[in-house]
Image (tube, rainbow, N blue to C red):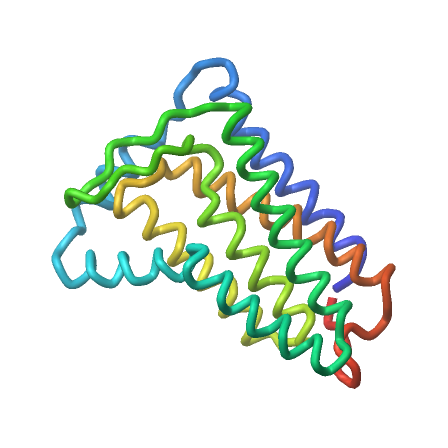
Length: 208
């Protein structure tokens, strides 16, 4: 990806995140949150709820950590430690950033729907919108994935974000902020990848 495109994407992501974070830091609300939340919840039916519960699990540590362990194990066996470093360090740094921002802005969670168990952490930004997008975005870059796989990452991030609003765990602005941060994080880690090596996985070329 061209450096100027990455820079523009990162700046745009920061601007979007700032537009969500600034009013919350001042104790204000975001106007579209409640209407969009209500509109999405109005679509609810049992089959969709079951699907959204499954999709939201794909963005949890119960799925991402075991998958990362398998990938890192394979890369270590093949001597591809740079790939392991990028995936683990990129994803963990995103998780740390998400938790720090939650603690800094300390936005309370909305009330969950469907009798689900509430989450005790703060709401903004959505870690499910942020961290998995970084995780799979870095993985796509490592594997030099083509446009279809990149599109799949975008679709996955969209469904994960939708699931968090649908189930009631987040306000829409939490999700938008998480997506914006993911764009910034991926741009930064693309720089790290390009500085560390031209090739991340042996014969496979990085597509960053």
